[in-house]
Length: 180
Image (cartoon, rainbow, N blue to C red; front, side, top):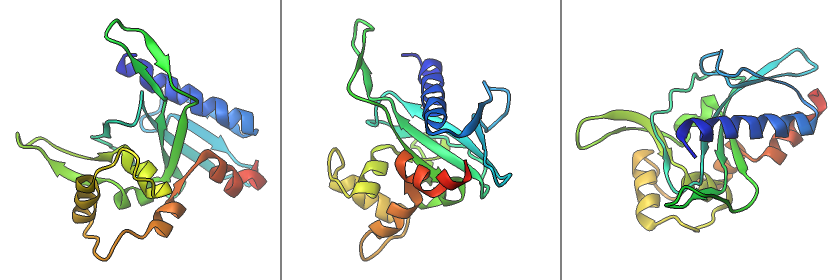
C-alpha cells in the first residue's frame, strides 16, 4: 500500500467505526488542514480528529505536526497488514486504534535530531501498545530506556497515567456515548 493509500484507509476505517457507534461524524477528505474527521456531540461540542495510520506498528510516527487543543485528538491506527515483495497485501486481523488527546501527546512523543541534523517530533508506534497494556511484545529494553530518558522518567513508568490518556475505541465510546 502506498503512503497515501495507508492514510486514506485509516481515515475511512476510523470514520466507519464512529458511524457504526452512532456518532454524527464528518470526514473532511483533505480539505481541512490538521482535521481529518469531526464529530458533533449533542451538547454542541465539536471533537476533531487527526488520523495517522501505518500498515503495522513496527515503525514510528515521526514528524507529527498536530495542533494541541482540548477537543482535538490524534488517532493512531494499526491497519494490521503487510505487503509482500511482489506487492500483494495481506491482512493480519482487524485494524486497531489508539486515541490520544492532542494536549497529552508530549507524554508520549518527543523532539528528536538525527545524525544528519534533521529534526522532528514523534515516537515509536509500538510504545502505544506497551504503555497501554504493559505488554513487552516487540519492545526492547533499549526502547523502554530511551523512552524513560527522553521523558526524564525515573523510578519507573506510571502505567496508570498512560492507561488514562491512551484510549481504545471502546474506551472512547464509554466516555462519550451519552453525548451522541
